[in-house]
Figure 1: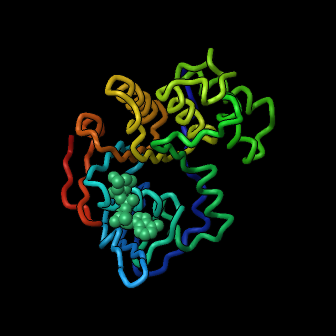
Figure 2: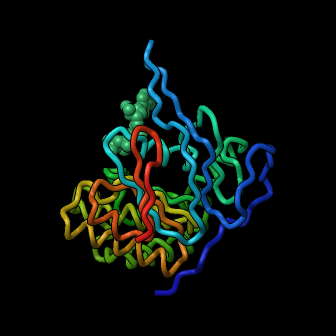
Length: 251
Ligand SMILES: Nc1ncnc2c1ncn2[C@@H]1O[C@H](COP(=O)(O)OP(=O)(O)OP(=O)(O)O)[C@@H](O)[C@H]1O
Ligand SMILES: [Mg+2]
């Protein structure tokens, strides 16, 4: 199946705050990023000076012990949370300098999210779950239908399109979530332990779909995993510990 390549075109909101200059080639660039949570008297440094760069079209995995800051890092990149200090640039734009509408737009149109527990809407069918982001993006009904069917076919679920999430296996639910993440043609897909709830075989199938999307659509993929066999399927592996990136391996 041929799909149209998508790029983030809008750099108009790029603000050079002088301190950090992102590489124009980068899809994601993170500078001196910290995130401190205040828990009563105790400070938790979830991120403690992270620097990294991911180029357009790269497939990068992130591994590290529980609590090392992986989800926190993804949340910063996806504009789901704000940094304590440092900066995150997505396609050359400083996420912190975006207003609410720009951040919403980034999440809705430019980034596809895939989570460990699928996060499907339980009362909507597979088809309706995939269609939903396009409804929010005010895409006309006819083209919503075409795309939703195309993405469900891409993940091999056209026959199950009328199933509710509870009527699908874990692997099938995650495939619906992948189809949904593609709905608005994001240039970047962020996946937080997408295979965490699946057996090895289904986990590999899910990653194979991500690999195909990475190659065919030139989508940039950033995937967190606990499974070394899954982590090795990316092109580059980052290791985190105690809120820092401590190692980087080209695969
Ligand atoms: N909202 C929050 N409030 C307070 N502390 C938090 C919050 N979110 C995360 N933390 C803390 O920040 C640290 C990093 O958490 P994070 O969720 O990023 O880890 P993780 O690497 O994704 O772990 P896991 O592999 O278990 O998912 C942990 O010590 C965690 O307890
Ligand atoms: Mg996590």
